[in-house]
Image 1 (tube, rainbow, N blue to C red):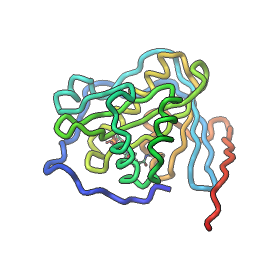
Image 2: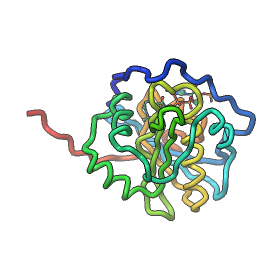
Image 3: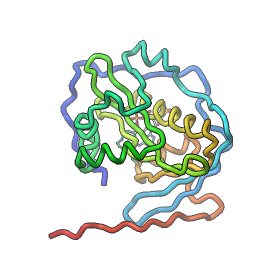
Length: 204
Ligand SMILES: CC(C)(COP(=O)(O)OP(=O)(O)OC[C@H]1O[C@@H](n2cnc3c(N)ncnc32)[C@H](O)[C@@H]1OP(=O)(O)O)[C@@H](O)C(=O)NCCC(=O)NCCS
């Protein structure tokens, strides 16, 4: 699903790595997962209610020109779509993206000050009380590897935990498992396996 199709880097200088001074671990998360036939892995987790440590403060990110947003206001869906395509997700109908985001419980995205464009995004759907599923965790290829993905995930997790949602699931490509594990996600806890029904479109 995630075939690399990088866009041209829009900036001459890729920002340097965002390094941290505070604790990053989301403690006591108990998480389960299942390897899917489509090479996607489902991970679910439970965690304590309350704010967890974050690796880098909003202030520190803002100083570097990265601004967090927690609603779809001012989010350019075509530009978001471009990030999806750049990381290998299929391009989606913008109208359907809007509907999906309107039915999303929590989302956040990072705007790069210089370009005024979104460069990182993640969202979660759920029942608002017990369960949530995280979707569409993406960082523009030009900005990957500098801590933004972790920063986005930490904040999204904290938003869910603050709501008291302690069962948090996601699908992970095998090659991204190592990104999610330090955030507290584990595969197959206590042997629990996820099952997914997914109707695939037939090739014509
Ligand atoms: C996966 C993704 C969101 C990570 O974002 P990122 O900004 O590049 O990651 P970060 O710089 O925040 O990395 C945080 C940590 O995770 C590690 N990490 C990042 N990607 C990793 C990977 N694929 N495998 C293992 N570890 C990874 C980093 O080394 C870093 O470790 P550190 O905290 O010890 O320094 C980003 O690479 C991306 O958008 N990929 C394409 C889309 C995708 O695959 N999304 C997930 C769908 S399942």
